[in-house]
Length: 187
Image 1 (cartoon, rainbow, N blue to C red):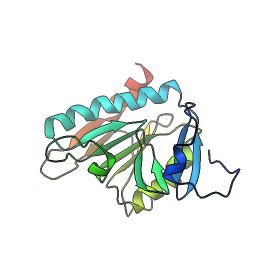
Image 2 (cartoon, rainbow, N blue to C red):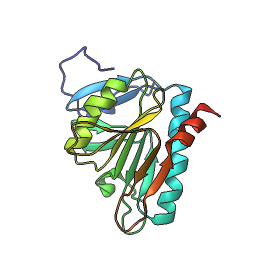
Image 3 (spheres, one colour):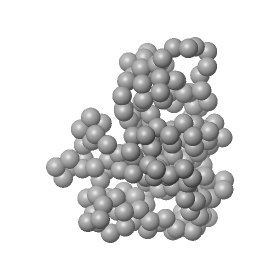
Image 4 (cartoon, one colour):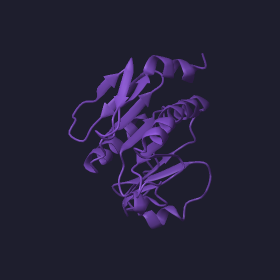
């Protein structure tokens, strides 16, 4: 949901003035977006992906995974809070700040009715402009993942399996999406 009550150009500093009320506040191209807290199944989907990706990153030292709430600050007018994101290690250790990480290797958003348009269009455009190598939009209802890369005009729709290889020196992570969505459903 986009806050439309003002023509104000929002900045990172403005975020500090907003209430800590359980809502998610993000700024994209200077516009404020407010999203309510996600539903229970959203959390299950994020948790299940974290459990699949974190062991791979620990085994390969290919990066470090983070989850919301954690701000990614591209600039004063673009501050987002992805559900999950992976950043590179810094001298073999997890970065201590976003500034130290400096870039994203992967961003994942699990869509909900309140966030679908923002995640599929506005955030996707931002991530592509920022050169994020992979952006996954997880649609729990449709049981598929939309994979976007910087130059894509259409997503790759994955519903059986997904492979992610953050760098050629590491083997790919393979995710069985059928099993993943079964886990999210609690089966």
